Every structure is written in C-alpha cells, then in structure tokens.
Image 1 (cartoon, each protein chain N blue to C red):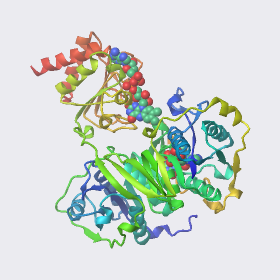
Image 2: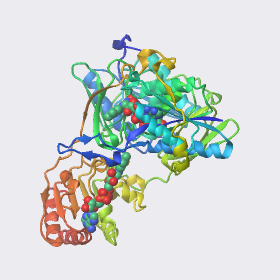
Image 3: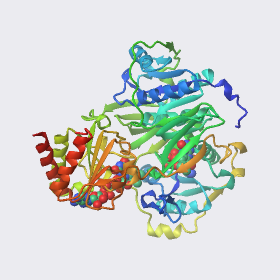
Image 4: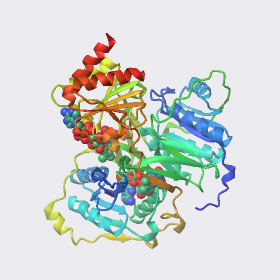
Amino acid sequence: MTSTKDLSAHKGVWVFIEQFEGKLTQSTLSLEILGEARKLADKLETELTAVLLGENLADTAAELIQYGADKVLVGDAPVLANYRTELYTDIICKEAEERKPDILLVGASATGRDLAPRISFRLHTGCTADCTELGIDDDKKILVSTRPAFGGNVMATILCPDHRPQMSTVREGVMDVPVKDASRTGEIIALDITAKEEDARVKILEVKKHEAASVNIQEAIRVVSAGMGACTGECFDSLKQLAKELGAELGGTRPVFESGRIPHEVQIGQTGKTVRPELYLAVGISGTVQHTTGMSNSRTVVAINKDPNAEIFKFAHYGIVGDAKAVVPELIDQLKAAKG
Amino acid sequence: MKIIVCIKQVPDVTEVKWDENGSLIRTGLPSIINPNDQNAIEAALVLKEEQGAEVTVISMGPPQVEEALREALAMGCDNAVLLTDRKFGGADCWATAYTLGLAVKKLGGCDLIFCGVEAMDGNTAQVGPEIADFLDLPLLSYAEDIKVGEGTVTIHQNLGDVTRVIEGPLPALVTCEKELNEPRIPRMDLVFSCFDKEIMVMGIDDLEGERANFGLKGSPTRLRKVFSPKRAKAQVEFLDGTPKESSQKLVEKLQEINAI
Ligand SMILES: Cc1cc2nc3c(=O)[nH]c(=O)nc-3n(C[C@H](O)[C@H](O)[C@H](O)COP(=O)(O)OP(=O)(O)OC[C@H]3O[C@@H](n4cnc5c(N)ncnc54)[C@H](O)[C@@H]3O)c2cc1C
Ligand SMILES: Cc1cc2nc3c(=O)[nH]c(=O)nc-3n(C[C@H](O)[C@H](O)[C@H](O)COP(=O)(O)OP(=O)(O)OC[C@H]3O[C@@H](n4cnc5c(N)ncnc54)[C@H](O)[C@@H]3O)c2cc1C
C-alpha cells in the first residue's frame, strides 16, 4: 500500500484508556497520555477523543471529559469487562475505519503493547513503540515520536508520514497527569457492541491481581536508589534508614532487584520505572544508560560512589566520592542533626 | 504437531561500547539469538520431547543470520528457514510481520507459532502480535507457562498488574517471556552434524506477497533520526572531605535548595 490514501480525511487525536473493573487503572498511564494528547490536539486544532472499553463505565467516561477529552467513545458490555486482544482490536479497528482518526495513542503497558501492534497491522499503519516524547512537526502537521531502542543506548525519532492513523505507544511516568476540571463539558458516544462471548476465541480462565504495590515510586518526591555498591554488609539496611530519615521511597537498579532486595515495582530504569522526583540519591550505582533513562529527569541528583569516574556523576548535581558503608551512616547522623 | 519459532539475530547490547563522542559502536558486537527467542525455542523443544512435534525456526535478515539458525538446529530444532533478500532490508514491524507471516503460509501453516515477547535491539514487542493479526490467529502473549492440550493452548500471561490464565484454540501464536524456562545450550554433537544440514532460503520471489509491502518501501514508519541519549546533563559539584564533612556539606546544599 502506498500514499494513495486520502490522508486529509483523517482528523482528531484518539487515546485508548485502560480500565480495571470499570474504573481507571491504578496506574495513571492513560491519564498521562490523555494530558499529552490534549496538547497535540490543541496544536492541530482538532478534537481529543478517549476510547474506553469495558463494563459499567458511565462514571469513568464522565471523568475522562474532566481530564480533557472532548469526546468519549464508550463500548460498555459484559463481554468487554476483561481485556481481550481480538475483541478490543475488532471494535477499535471498526471505529477507526469509520471515524478516521489522525492519531491513535495507546499506553506502553503490557495491555497496550499487546493491543496496539495488532490494531496497527490491521489498519495497515505504522506504530512507534514505547515513546518517551511526542510532538507535532510544524510544517507537515504530523506526529513526531521519540523512543529509546537498543536497550536505551540510542534514541530514535520516528514518523508515519503516509499511513493513518499515526500510532504510538507511550511509556509510563514520562508525561504529566492533567489537572481535573469539573467544569469541562463533552460528548459521550455509546458504541453499539455486537460481540458475544462465543465470538471470543481466547477464554480467560483465571485472573490473579498482584498484591497492590505498597509504594508508588513514580509519585515519590524523594527517592533513595540502591545500586550493587550499596548492597554489601549492613549498607543496604542503613540505606533503608536513610530513606526513612529523608521521607524518601527506596528504589534501585536491576541487579539489586535481581538479588531479591527490592521488588520489581521499584526498579528504576529502562525495564523498570521512570521517576522524576525532586531529589534522587543514587548510592553505589554505576550509571549505565539503562538505569539513567529512568531517572535523568529528576530535579536534583546526588550520587555517592567510590569510583570518581563512575558514569552516574555525569547525571549528578552533587557528588560524594567515598565508600557508601562510611558515608551513608554519617549522612543519617547529619540529617538528624540538621533537624535538631 | 508443527511448531514454527520466529527468531531474530541481535547484537548483544549488554556488550555495547561507546566511542569518545558518546556514540554507540555497533561494529564488532557479538551476535546472539535474541534472548526471548531462546526461550521460545526451548518451549518448542520441550513440547517436542513431551508430545512429539516438528520444530521449524525461521528468521528474516542478512545472510549471516544463518549462524543463528544453525545454533537453533544444534539446540535440537528440526528445520531452518532463512528469509533473505535485499528487498527485505529496512523493514519496520509491519513489513517484518508481513514477510514472516507470508513465510508461515508458504510453509503450509502450523499448529503453533512461538515468538519472543521482545527483541533486545528494536525493543518494540510488536512483531509477534502483528503476525497473529496477519494470519488471523488468536494471540496469547507474555507466556510464563505453556500447556498444550487437545486442540488448545493454555498459558499463564503476565499482564503487569495481573496474571491471567488464558486459553485459545490451535492454531495460535504465543509470545514467550524469559520466566518461561531456562534455554538449553547447543549440543556439541549436533553442532557438527548441523554444520552441513540444509537451510531453506526464501527471497521475495518465493513469497506470494505484494512487492510494495516488503522492506523499507513497505514500512509505514520512517526513521527521522537516531541519536545518543543525553549523557552529560548536570555539572556535578563534588563535596570533598571525610565522610562526615562531605555529608555535612551535602545536607547544607540540600537545605539551600529546599530539597529537604
Ligand atoms: C536490556 C537491558 C535492560 C536493563 N534495564 C535496566 C533497568 O531498568 N534498570 C537498571 O538499573 N538496570 C538495567 N539494566 C542493567 C544495567 O545495564 C546495569 O547493569 C545496572 O544498572 C548496573 O547496576 P548497578 O549500578 O547497581 O551495579 P554495578 O554496575 O555493579 O555498579 C556498582 C557501582 O557501585 C560502586 N561501588 C561499589 N562498591 C561501593 C561502595 N562500597 N561504596 C560506594 N560505591 C561503591 C561501583 O564503583 C559501581 O559504580 C538493563 C540491562 C539490559 C541489558
Ligand atoms: C532505533 C530503531 C527504532 C525502531 N523503532 C521502531 C518502531 O517504533 N516501530 C516499528 O514498527 N519499527 C521500528 N523499528 C524497526 C524494527 O526494529 C524492525 O522492524 C525489526 O525488524 C522488528 O522489531 P523489533 O526488533 O522491535 O522486534 P520485536 O517486535 O521486539 O520482536 C518480537 C519477536 O518477533 C520475532 N521477530 C522479530 N524480528 C524478527 C525477524 N527479523 N525474524 C524472525 N523473527 C523476528 C522474534 O520472535 C522476536 O522475539 C526500529 C528500528 C530501529 C533501528
């Protein structure tokens, strides 16, 4: 297929919204994208549409308007209660073919990364995966998506010039959650859902919700982050104490997660969470790009490392060259002293 | 049972080196079978051992991808197919899935297609779901456990916040996670006997597709630029002295900027 399609017929920005049991998911990813999509739609002087599939969605649909959507396409039916690739793909593709959006954004969550490629193949369009930045090309009025690849070692800027909708999946924690505005109005459009349970080839036999993570490190104002250099002897325990003293959440690098000291929910980096706290204190972290992509937007970064040439210092505002085993307990004392 | 495993040869990005300008040095990186695809091969071989199956690996790429295919044969796969053609070059996920999907059709289909969840270089995780859509197959993604019954496949699916047990009819496409298994290493005796085993090679003329849908030409996405992520962002101020002195300085600095 080539560029013979009439692209100008495609208008508007769509965002696929993830729900769980009819409510917005605990993760704010869908809202983050909605906020960013609002900016794109304003730049293109077009409408922003949220696409919401599930069961018992009335309240959530109304909420999406308050978060910035002009329209909400709602597919509300028991058969859609739990996410299923094919049912969701069928509905979204059918609507997209009729209503012709210019841009379709999906979260780069497990669900979104399952759904978006299947939609993009069927609509014969491109999908840029795991974007950390979205913009509009001023001349061509097309979507410009930037994403990490090669394990975060390179960034790529990708366009989809000749196919519509332009699709991207978007990483969690890189965009801001929009402010709710109760005075906003919009249109809620109920979709006619004809799919039946028998139509679903894939059956869900069991759903196990993981223990809700007790911390949401992405919302933390301060993060103390442990690297392998902070894991010897009692160092890790004193790091926990330091976090407590600072009112910070404790996170860490992938090897620290792999060693079982921290849960995956607080691993920071390319295959973990992206954080943007006011204060990021990296202790015994070497600073490879897979880690720093997850923390380089922190307001203030402090690094403690015994190697003065550690890469992490290139991302730090303040550095202490020293043994974490000696520095961390001192730091706890000094913080206590400062509090008086 | 016929199982097709899609494998990609990737540079070992854990071995990445940088030049003095901070650019990625791509030459000289060792090539490996994408880690998730090793899990996919292992899953297929386990099924072969337990229930009997013919396992075919296919890979699209330049001619040197043959090494990866030979390694898969040495792990115990039965057949290997190399999809190579200059016109396949520059394919994005859409064009890659199109080419692989056509090859599956050409091979007469199968009961199961196994892909990795994600390739370690492109990192998109899109090719598996896209092949499933092309071939109109049920997609069972993020498998951490796979059971094949009478005409069905059941997996444990890791969906992030939830784990689900889902079941679909065969034929189906499954994407494999690293938690699935521990891939075996190639057997020495097979390494030698696989050396001259025939690998089926297919090019654009062997596939019944539209020529405009292959390779760069058939790719809806366009790479505008590739660059190294910002490396040096902050100008670090080192706080010297004994642990006590430097800690004291740090606390003062953080108080100054209201970070604590
Ligand atoms: C595809 C892929 C994805 C990845 N995703 C992630 C990810 O999401 N997050 C992530 O973090 N990593 C990720 N990694 C791993 C990453 O490449 C690094 O291996 C990892 O970040 C290094 O962790 P580290 O800094 O804790 O350990 P190391 O690299 O071992 O560094 C330890 C550091 O501590 C210092 N040190 C040692 N002893 C002391 C001491 N007593 N006092 C003070 N300093 C000390 C050392 O000088 C060194 O700098 C990924 C890798 C790959 C290939
Ligand atoms: C920097 C960079 C960024 C890119 N970004 C995008 C993007 O956002 N969107 C896009 O559409 N394309 C993108 N591409 C192109 C994309 O990487 C290639 O199309 C690639 O062939 C497939 O993508 P992947 O490596 O992400 O594979 P994934 O989709 O992550 O691979 C999943 C599985 O599919 C199978 N598979 C993948 N490729 C092959 C193969 N060649 N042969 C056999 N099996 C295979 C394997 O089982 C693999 O485990 C990018 C390329 C580069 C260099």
